[in-house]
Image 1 (cartoon, helix red, strand yellow):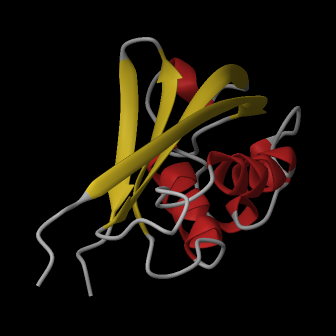
Image 2: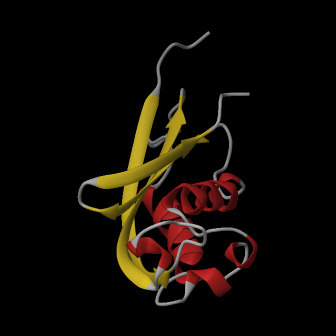
Length: 128
């Protein structure tokens, strides 16, 4: 079994407004963020070019997902019309959407969503 593990990470951003229902504080009111989103993939193998995955594949897929949320009111964007668009739920949503866009043997490892410079949420799943 190959013990090598390569990790590749790309970061992008989007701006959007939201409110958190049932939150006791300022975040219950309409407000916005300039979210930073980071995705990390892992692979134990490199292709003939010496690459686990072209960064462009990751950036393109992430850009498509973030474009659905950019400059929107997230509470009205599926799937958030039925759940709070918290940083945690946004990270899980991006993970779910990205997961099918990463070709094997590379696997999506984690998604990190920053709502500010000092506050972020991370979502990952155990290896299968």
